[in-house]
Length: 143
Picture 1 (tube, rainbow, N blue to C red):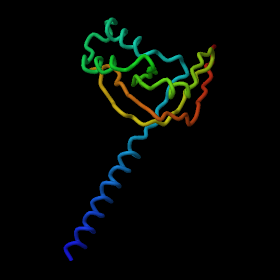
Picture 2: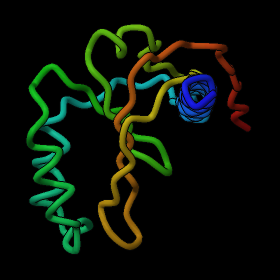
Picture 3: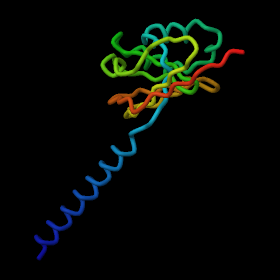
Picture 4: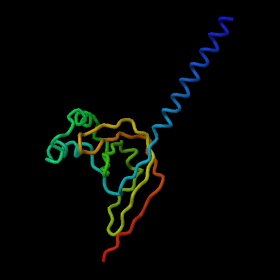
């Protein structure tokens, strides 16, 4: 009887752990919008943060973390975030600078880390598994 109870308890624990892991993976998918503009290499954004007065109160821990990425990583600035991804994921995103229209790439991705640059500054999202789900095109009307 004890052996049967132990087996049932072990199965229940494994099931709970499996469901928790599946929930965590599903929760990690995020939808973001990225303007269709050329991205910045990770080294350029690090240099900008270090030298531009706008970033004078940056979080040094986050900057040190950014410096650990290899030159293979790309940053897409958005109004709210600096989105960091590897170049394999970055090539999936349209990077056309245009006149008269604005193109936004709506993507889904897994957010691996969300770091703060400090009060009043954009957060830094480190993402992977990027998939473009749609593109929004907005025309500018000049009068």
